[in-house]
Image 1 (cartoon, helix red, strand yellow):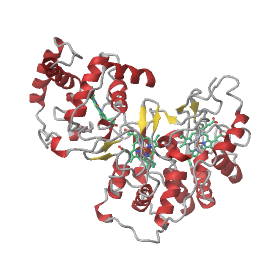
Image 2: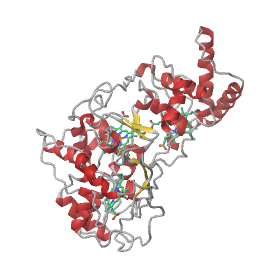
Image 3: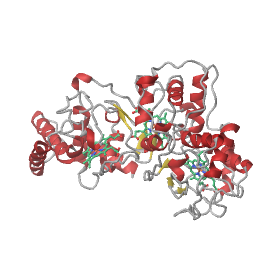
Image 4: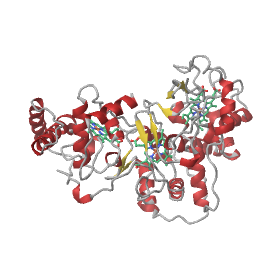
Amino acid sequence: MKPLSAVMPARSFSLALTLTLGLSATSTIAMADTVSLPINTLPSRISLPNVSPANSALANRGAYVARTADCMACHREDYSGGVPIETPIGNIYSTNITPSTRYGIGSYTEANFKKALRKGRAPNHQIYPAMPYPSYHGMTDEDISALFAYFQTVPIVDKPPEKTTRLPFPLNIRSLMLAWNVINVPSTENRSGLTQTQQRGEYLVNNLEHCGTCHTPRNLTQGLDKDRYLSGAPLGKWFAPNITPDNDTGIGLWSEMDIVTYLRTGMLDKRAYAGGPMAEAVAHSTRYLTDEDLIAMASFLKVVPAIKTDDYLIPVNVARLPQPVSNSITYNLLEQKDYLAKAKANTSHVTISQNSSKNSRMENSNSSKSLYLAHCASCHGVDGYAQPDARYASIVGLSSIRRAKPDALIGVIAFGAKGAFNTAPKMPGFSKDLSHAQIASITNYVRVTFGGLPSSNVSAADVTRVIKEKS
Ligand code: HEC
Ligand code: HEC
Ligand code: HEC
């Protein structure tokens, strides 16, 4: 039997993004020590979308706290709930947290609210840790008060969530979480010797943004493994990479500005793209944060202990990356169509050989290119840079295609991608349409051609293993 506490908040990947753009509010967070980045070059922030309807200072501050704590990613932008959080014991659905007295938290006192956030204790039941209370445990009294004031002003949704949690006995015995809490709450410890900016960053990363719930491996009871904090963890069909400052396997080579840009926009040219669960964190939360707060997180991430894992990141060799065929949006579609038709004709009579004689290796690379052109190039471009206007992701140089372990890339090709902030049609999964050998062949082509890797030898067996593991 799986441990009762095996609750892993791998978020569902189907959250609606309905943003109501509202007044812009200024942050009330004062940073005492100096900030090391040139503010005027930061990508600009989307104006704060959810100022409290009451527009009082306290409730507006609470609206910002709700953004930093990413409540909407799980409870929906209108807080009506019903979003499935995938866990090893089954789906746990978020609840309605609007001030409806019947279906929401309208009858909560501030003390009830505080207990729910810090201890996972609702007035009448214990909450499953799919709600990240082990991280919220460290929330300040001031932030909880502001958040509570804000939630009083949120429009009431007077209906139950579309779906609610139904776990079989004995998993439905909520009080068993009490024992789990003793071991796993709080999920992080504060470090000493940090600057004031880094302390703010620590609070944001550890407590409000709960970055560790996805990026930290789990211990035997499925709590966060503090010794491997932020060093990367599987997440359903995805993998949340190592974000400690290790140069070879983490983000040690990223500057603070790189981190800020990624959290603000969900992408970093020729380096990284948030196309999966990370897109939700960006879409619902980090892109709205103040410059000061993003800088604080970046400067904290630079000083967390660096952890080396076995998931090596092969550095970008810029010289090996392709040049864009065209920078302009009027990318020659007709020419491309022609190319694709030829490529499709080619692949229909090509058989992929896993044989390694010199001849068949050449044939292999030809066919892998044809496969890429036929199945991927219509969105990602012949050159991998995609069509910038259509918001298909440029895949050139991405960290996800430069990992020593090809698992994350195989996962994307097999199961597809749809990021929460992307308006382009989603990337389909190819696990049904292509053979495992064909997926392996495309994986190798992408890693070498667009990742700049000297070689890649992913096999059909690797693809079979990854698909089995992630299904
Ligand atoms: C990672 C997903 C996730 C995030 C982020 C999240 N929640 Fe939750 N929350 C849940 C789930 C799932 C439940 C239901 C858990 C259960 O059924 O035991 C829940 C339950 C709750 C409850 C208990 C409601 C009740 O009486 O049943 C409250 C209150 C709550 N959340 C408030 C918040 C607030 C406020 C935020 C932001 C500060 C937040 N949540 C962020 C997933 C999340
Ligand atoms: C819901 C789970 C989830 C949460 C919460 C989350 N991440 Fe991620 N993160 C991921 C996944 C999965 C990826 C891989 C990229 C993707 O999704 O396309 C990723 C990628 C990243 C990357 C790029 C690393 C690389 O090598 O390409 C950085 C940096 C990052 N996350 C930082 C953060 C920070 C900081 C936070 C907290 C503000 C955070 N993440 C919260 C799941 C998450
Ligand atoms: C219909 C268009 C479409 C097709 C066809 C397509 N993709 Fe994608 N792909 C996307 C979109 C869109 C994203 C970004 C996800 C998002 O933001 O919604 C993406 C993301 C990616 C990523 C980045 C994932 C990450 O988070 O790092 C890779 C790598 C990728 N695609 C490779 C491929 C390969 C290889 C093929 C062919 C087997 C392919 N794609 C076919 C649209 C497509």
